[in-house]
Image 1 (tube, rainbow, N blue to C red):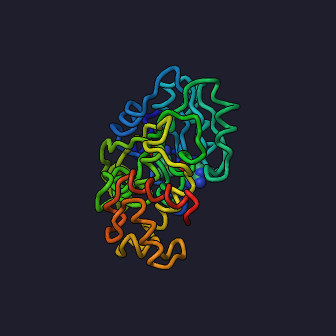
Image 2 (image 1 turned 120 degrees about the vertical axis):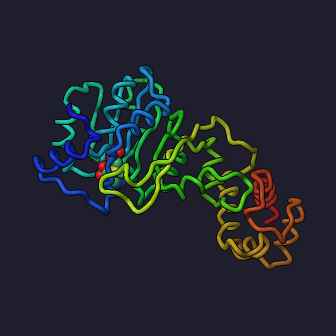
Image 3 (image 1 turned 45 degrees about the vertical axis):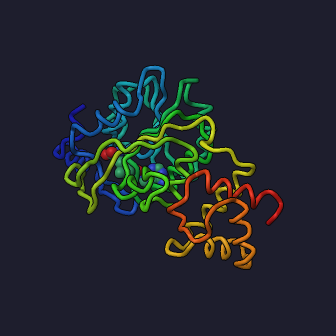
Length: 287
Ligand code: SAM
């Protein structure tokens, strides 16, 4: 197959198959031939690994994963891509292309039935309109995956990989850190895509944890506290917790004091241990 990151190859395939990019589906394809080998290399691809790719597009990253992995499962929502993929991935016998919406597909069943018992990693140039929902779905479904290497918008990457505590952090930072250890790998400029997006992108890798970084009595309560704490970024923790849990301020202050967490701080100043301490007070029956 011709070089799939060559714009002339992409234009040729588009004209042959009558394909047009869908902005709604976040179709910005890689045209920089240094990017996909680097993503595949840094993803942990290996012969004893099955890579789950979300959104193969014309197969530029798929082909790099196929060279390095025992198996590739590539899922794309756009049926129009399938005739193109049968042509571009013709020589790749270890690739299985599946038509489906990553947000609706039972990924656990897919891995169980099709990964051939190999270790599983996720690797993708994600459609930007669902970056965080996809990442959170993968992490929260507790898929048996070792790592998640994905290209996202630079701003999303910064938020996801932000230190805790820090001004850049948000609820997604805490949620991702709960399930994994994130690492910012490298940036990719808009010119590396066709069509060129308005934003800079970045590749991140999340190494999935086998156990959470802090102990809590009730994980659901931990996330309820995190959600409430970040619900109004400019307000104090006291105000956010009081409104998030429908409590009188005096009662909320009393509970925060029991958790030894200052009420006047903002969520961005808290550590994972602080969120856990608040959650444990709330799930201890006092709330
Ligand atoms: N991997 C190719 C590349 O790097 O050039 C294409 C990446 S493009 C940014 C995103 C891909 O995700 C597109 O092929 C698009 O059709 C697909 N996609 C969009 N929404 C999806 C969804 N909900 N489920 C699965 N695939 C989706």
